[in-house]
Length: 310
Image (cartoon, rainbow, N blue to C red; front, top):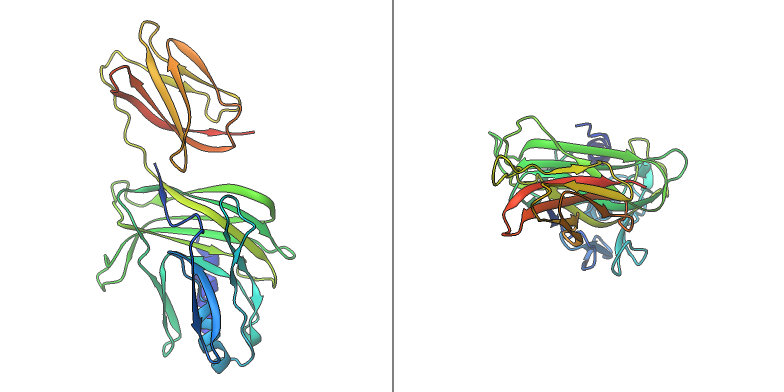
């Protein structure tokens, strides 16, 4: 059992490798009982954690009482609830990071191994994983987020095959902060069919009582390639990153329309463009946005993204 926990830590904390929902709002939770005597556990819809493994198998292997590490909290970025993931000392195993994943955790107790399978189905290639997090570490601890774009059952042995990965580690974040993690693909033309996302409340040297809060998790797909209606129509958008003003420049004699959306797909602004037009983005929160420029007939001239910094 200790080997299982060690493998979980190593994998989740040591991976170096238009916005869609991952049930990422953390609003709907399920409760279930496991272990003997039964212990009540909880998890957000679409997400899993190793709590049931620790509660059910831990006492028989290492002795002691095992505490759950995933909690529903009202300390949310938006809505009513978020996920609270906590590093806890689990008997003789020592301090174990709290883990949260949208994949299924499969454990082979006999061989002391584990694997992840499945994830959230995709209809495109993920560009970024986005999450609002805050983190209260103990000592020099750090939290981790890892993402893995896969083809389910794509390997020769029937397991999932990895096509693209992303990773981020961070220290204390006293307030909710948006983290966007780019995924890197070995083959630029690869097309995964599912995405796995993993949050860990500690690194490989876990410290008891480090707490990670997770809310509003989403992913963004690679934007559609730039489309030009005619070769003589040129659109320029700058600067990137931007602060308070974003400029859209089109032909002086042509009226265009510009629209921006945040990573959740919400429209954050529109503008009518003629010539070099400044767009006021001073009210935009820091983060990544997507924009589309069209002509008066709705033909797409350009789609891309920009970042707002403060």
